[in-house]
Amino acid sequence: MEIPRHWRLQKQRYSLVGEVCPHCQAKIFPARDVCPECGGEAKKPFAFSGRGKVYSFTLMHSAPAGFERSTPYTVALVKLDEGPVVTAQLTDLGTKHAEIGMPVEMVTRRIREDGDERGMLIYGYKFRPVMQS
Amino acid sequence: MKNRDDIIIAGIGQVPVGEHWELSLRNLAARAMLAAFKNCGELKPQAIYAGSYLASVASGQANLGALMAECVGLSGVEAFTTEAGEASGAAALHLAVQAIQSGYVETVLVVGVEKFTDVVGSEMEAFISQSADSDFEGMQGLSMTGVAGLVMQRYLHEYGVPRPALSAFPIVAHANAVNNPYAYFRRAISEEDYQRAGLVCDPLNLLDVAPYADGAAAVVITRRAALPKTFHQRVVKVAASNLLTDSLSLHDRQNLIGFDAARLSAQYAYEKTGMTPEIIDLFEYWDAYSIYAALELEAAGFAQSGEGWKLGQDGSLGLRGRIPVATLGGLKARGFPLGATGLYQVADAVTQLRGEAGENQVQGARVALVQALGGAAATAVTHILESE
Image (cartoon, rainbow over all chains, first blue to last red; front, side):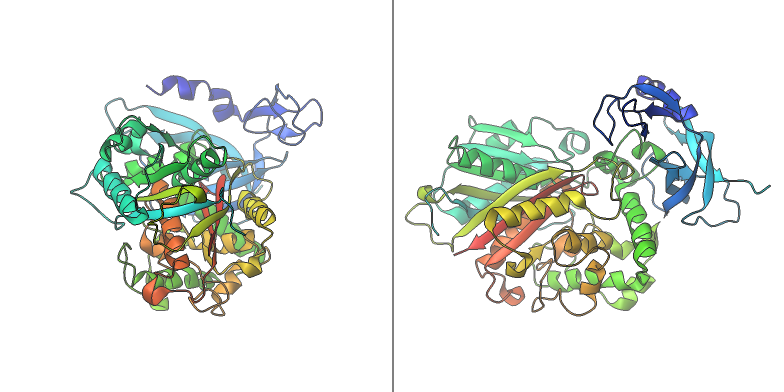
């Protein structure tokens, strides 16, 4: 039932594609065809680097339907290096605790499973701590 | 100054907020509407505006206008639903005020109704998250409580707020609910209870979160000129009514830890009436989460950004304090019946302004500020009510 709804967002979900405003060069995510900075039309695709920093986070002990099996999980506001803020789960934290200011990078992971017989698996972006080299 | 065209709240009606296993959506709404009729005397509405957020998914029922009219024997009148997330009831009242101001109708019955307990746990949590951005917040596993967790974490960080300070908001709300027969949790809580509460969306704990429940509340509003001679209530006027929006998602906000829509909405209401925060005798604020209570105080001009929490530390918020809040329990202890909540807030404010709040009466209460939010203040609805 919901398949087209997820399919149409695949570029955004899998490769963090947003837009860049031709008028003021603001980078936009999610794509919306209108620049939130200057109000001009903005339809030019722009692929984000996927790097950013944690702006805030919450540890979800109580989850909405479709996410119960993942608790507890961390949802963060990630401020991307290019400007916009995106809402996403943090992953691969291991023994680390999420922290405001923590550098993170985008990875593609399973986001949600519908537990019923239709059983759709949805993939998309999550963010993990940047590996120390 | 009395004007024939003043908008008057002539009647209020409510059912106790709670788990009403024996009552359906229509039973709840009918009881609130009939109570509001009894309370207003002989007025007959020409329209019914219903505020409901989740009736179509939680009760499988849409087209509530026709249902509401039928429930109270008014089949045939103009009636429909307004939806503005959790602020739906307040939005319906705003619409009714405009309809009367325009001259289109004279008297409107406004009802807010939500049936919460027919759908369990996580599924309902997913429905409720519809007042955030479904594709880009809900799909990441974020609930409305999670959104509040994000706001709170950043607020604590940015302003260096001591975590326990937020306990003041639920403690005040619970103390005020004890004497309210319509409240869900009629018991006080202590600092220790708060410290012991389990984490829900860390840093939010269970006692930071207003409890969802079933409920319905209704008001009858009319023009002053239409008040019947037999009208025996103290007159309460709607001095200001407006609704503003911000971006739907938190991540698109210019200001992630200040409720800009709520701030501007309060500001417009002050400008419209020539009032200032100093004139407000009580504030029925939107304490869906204790962090929102702090942000509401900032948005409405009672504190600077980052300092709303301080009002909880010096007794300002009590019934005899500088700015009494949640005077009959607020969302936290009266309960949070989603789209119906905005009209419970109005009913509480009217109860105070009529001097009918009993042991919880705010002495000399004449002006009340009432604010309802949809989502994390993606929608903000402000009413200023004034008694004569």
